[in-house]
Amino acid sequence: MFENFNFAKLLDLKRIFETTPGTFFKFYKEFAIFFGLLFVLGFSIRVYLIFEKNKVWKKLLNRIKTLVFTVSILGFLYLFFRSENIFLFSSRFILVTILLTFLVWAAVLAIVVYLKLPQELKNYQKQLLIKKYLPRKKK
Image (cartoon, rainbow, N blue to C red; front, top):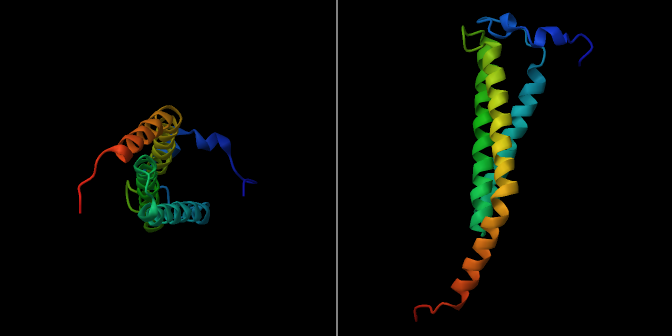
């Protein structure tokens, strides 16, 4: 896969901002598999959310689902534009933007998981404990 890969071309700004890079895309299959797996992950999270009771986990999984669906759909659009060689939309800059968006969004979610999630889970458990002992309406 990486036998003929030239790392100098990877950072060449002229190559990245080229508006019509051509229809030949060496990593088309790999990116199609990657975006397809993201779509399947998003769909499986969506199905799992139907059965999830914990509101804190549901909120986090909903954010992850939004991330993977957005990136997978944008990625498939990019692959379509690249295969059709559509001016400006098939630019390598679009792919770099999609991948950087995915990485930054995933990093923000990781920060939320490590910093906010434990506190939110504790608050949710306290709320459930208080709600357990509150009087309910009679049927």
